[in-house]
Every structure is written in C-alpha cells, then in structure tokens.
Length: 115
Length: 113
Image (cartoon, rainbow over all chains, first blue to last red; front, top):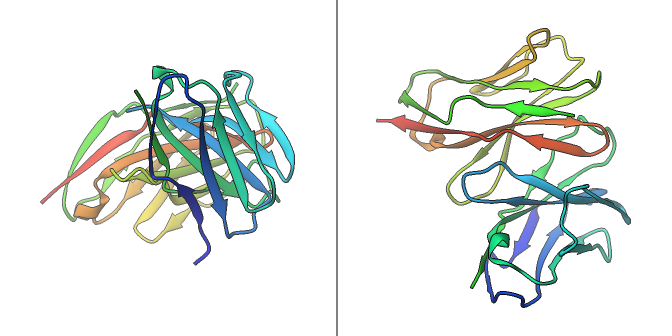
C-alpha cells in the first residue's frame, strides 16, 4: 500500500543535542510538509517542500531545518533542541496539483522527548 | 489571515446515535478547501472528508457528511451511527493560498456504549 512512513515513532534526545527525524513516501507526491503538534494543541505547519523548493513558515524558529534529497524522503533537523521542542512531529504529503484544495496524507508521527 | 474555530473541546455521544462537530472558519480567499481529520490516541491524522469552496453539494463519505454553509462560514462534521471506534480527536482544517493549511484546536469525541 502506498503510504507515508516516519521513523522512528519515538525519539529521545538530550537538551542541545542535534536530532534528525525522517519521513518517506511511496505516493510519489510533489509536496511534503512538516508539522509540530504539542500536547492537546492543533498541528502547526513548520514548512513544506514543493519538489525541491523549500517554503518556510514565517514563525518557524531558525532551530528547525529541513532537507529533501529526493522525491521520496524528507528530513527534519532540530539543531539544538530545547525542552519546548518536545512534541509530536507529523509529516504529510499532497499531490501538488490543485492547491489549496488538495488532501494531505499524514504519516504516523514521531514523538520527540527532550531530556 | 485564515482562522479555524472549533468551540467544542469535548463531546459525548451514545453508540449508534448521530453527532455534529462544529467548525467555523475565516478567510478572505475565494478558493479554499475545508478538511476534517480524525486523530486517534496513536497520533496518526486520518483524512475523513473534504469540501471545496466552490462545491454546491455537501460532501459525504460513508458515515461522514459535511454540513457546509458558506455564507455563515461553517463546515460542521456529522457522524451518523456512531461506533466505539469513533472515539478520537477531530480536527477541522482549511487550505488556502499555496499549500498552507491551518488546523483548529480540535474536538475530543467519546462514544459511550
């Protein structure tokens, strides 16, 4: 089945230690997104890639970076995690054919814990 | 700026009954999409239903229907014949601009046996 895969499902890191979360997709979608969802809150869009074009949300902290080496993979890098970065990180994809009215497909998420 | 408002933090419904989850939105765009997602405790966001701003008919997907009232800027989700497995968080979202999506704060639904 075509899907969005996130690894690992749970990630523990230390305060200030760089961490990378990964996302892959078999849907061959053009657009990939990263969301941050803190406990009991709405998912918040951090950035998205349309193919190789990177689009950062205005209020996304500089501490968060992303890479998309190819169509299938996208990475979220947190350069110096703080305690406030503990959250669920959701990766999503969409076709990239009819913004803004196209469905996003989400992965299972990675829960990040910062010690 | 776009905004989604879900005013019901929590809802209870008896099994096999119907339930309506409220969603209002604000946007100055003419072209936009409205989405509902279900998030079980496992965390994955599951797409339920979509309504385009130009769609005349209310969207339906199995037991899910979307009551779209454009003039009132509301997009309520109706779940018919509730099942125990419907217990989850439900998020309303709006897509507008270029690949920009805003989510509401969600409604936690509990289905009672």
